[in-house]
Length: 347
Length: 122
Image (cartoon, rainbow over all chains, first blue to last red; front, side, top):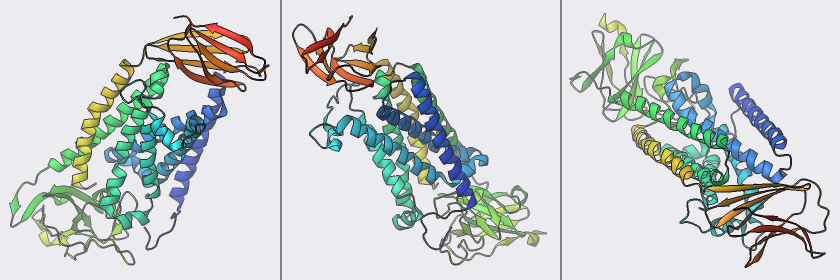
């Protein structure tokens, strides 16, 4: 979280994350090259670069797509989410090396522009086995390029969360495109069952994780309130909420996080202004609600980030009757001060 | 994630859960049946992957440095002789050739001399 833009706000966690990432990339490339040279001693350097970067980029893409649902299913995986952008940019760079070398290798020796050649050199659009699969790879790479260059918070603020998130949700279409690129490309003439099996397992794993996570989210949205009173809805009991934590409920159109802290209850929107992270899964740290994704902070009683930051989320009326917690699902404007409900008033 | 995005995510992955495995199976089922021929020589190894499609794939591995000033690769049958590429150095080469060819021929173009020829077993 920063009041001004820097290229990267380095901290210890990010440095550790990136060191592990670079180490993994280097180790993978080293092992791939060594094994390839053992199995295919006459393999050319160009082919080695194209194959090693292709498989590495595909592996990184699967890891990236797994992090979101894994973090939804188990908070243990939240640290992986923290610096996922660097993972994404790394994946794009590796994919770009694959794309550039492939275009040079297969399209740069003709008398037409190599990029144009990707689209016009193969026109077997009606054949499954000879389909111009490189077009799918090119499209996927372009989406990753757009995502990589807009991954900085500068673009998040200037494009707005909705546009930015929509742009970055295109990763799913890029994934489809890359799967098509692989299935209509290498799988058509690669007879080794190992590669086919790995791609199949990776794809099934990604699909299964996303289905399980989306089912979990849907079930949470379905939990309905028990009763309504003067616009307030009974959502839970006081003891259901841990100290400095929140209970998340879905009322009306969006989720609300009810935080318990210092003997009080406050309710704010569950959606962080930064990247729509789940505020209700965060904690109260130094008196502020702290988003579990990237550490953006908000004061619980008014939903505003502490100065000099300017992010604000909607707030809600909350009251305690007996041991029951009641929330008014009608939101106040973002950053509106709301008097917290105090626990001792019920005693 | 806000609720519209959750709904979008929910619908999208249900569609993908059907479409991607279907595509995966189709891509494997409709993979062209291949007939693979393999040859070994002192300086070259060849693999010819004939398919039911109109294209076969010829993979040539040059195992030792070439002893000829030029080495052109021709695909031949009774009706035609097609220049498909050139071998330059030690390494793996891959050429698409028409599936109706019956032999692959290596020619030293400078000396107009045949280096070697392989018949393709169908």
